[in-house]
Image (tube, rainbow over all chains, first blue to last red; front, side, top):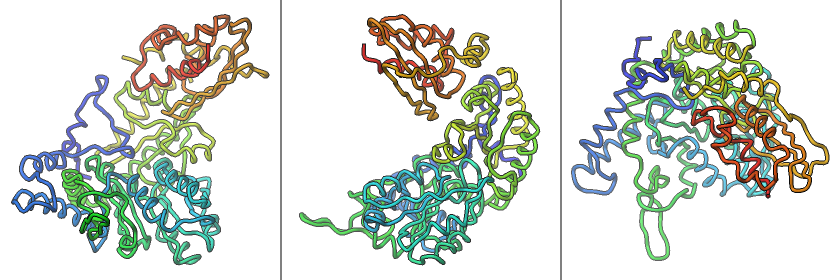
Length: 407
Length: 121
């Protein structure tokens, strides 16, 4: 892949006197200057509120905002942009479905199916909905190499299963689910069961065509795919979104307001109460342009190469345990590991001294941590701007950790 | 550099061989404290006598900073008045640890202190 590091101003920053090796893109990606400039240019040249004013700036802002929606729809293979709802992040997208669709459709005795490897954002909303409405939350296990246990998955779906909500790519183990096949499994057992897929770790890193997956809802977030924080996406089938009540009330989302009643705007604005993150949407649209220019196949290939290299190097270090599959074809650009006997936070602190940024802790996936019988893990994650040199720095950093802790 | 603690022999010694590590059966008071940063938990066990801390032990798993902090603090409060616990400050803990702690790791350094603060004098 062409060296694009110069597009990312933050990567020339020094941390503790060393040039930063940013290995935490699964938490949030860095932003290219094209995105940063687009946000700034929007505020300089086109800023106004959307869908309201008659004046020129308002028309420009509306065009920029709706233009971004079209770009995002194209980016993930959605033909009808009005099925794309802008929200704050993937968490809000899942909460929207859990509150709006969930409170309408889930009642006592109904079953909700998730997996043990969900991020808290795709776990707690369903857990709380189940507690509130007397539904049953079923948690499907994973196999030893981090792959979804499809037999147990199929078994978990019964005549009472109203929704299945599961990850596309695991934020800890990097596991890539074969979501197309898993959707078929669900449809084969109970066609009317709704399926939500959490694509927060997938859309930034591989070509995703939602129209080919066959699910009912798909969510992802902007800040992990070179876009700004504060903008995320819910995609839902039109007929489902139309039947769902609004999640929030206020301006923008109404059609008509009278003293005693109101009616709702059309999709997607019914779900976009209040002034939206217009600049965020514009920035996300430019992030999609940037990724399109590289080509998502190339993004994926680059990460496979880095993961292969990282696994090869890390598995040579004594006392390092890698979690999940060692097959880079089956995992995204994420490598979770622990250094024997040393807490992940201590590992991360020593690496930080060397200017190496990794994530440590439970990764908002405590059910998975319990399942793996670990308290925490260190995680290095890669993106388009990472190189083999970053992996080498990580390896050197881990050797230093072992030295400091006399391992 | 705010990671000086890792380079102090004493801290690593406390991490490898923490003092007062274990459980007191029939403890007068048991307090659990969770570090929201990582989900690590520490549990303190107390035996009181005449308004003083007669014995104290702690268990749990954690990073070097939280374990060393719990080890040093537990040793420091033995035979002290129960009412003195609420007077221990974060600064006192840092002094006992022997140096500053990176801002992102203060929750680890203060995990044991947070547990002690729950003890009513």
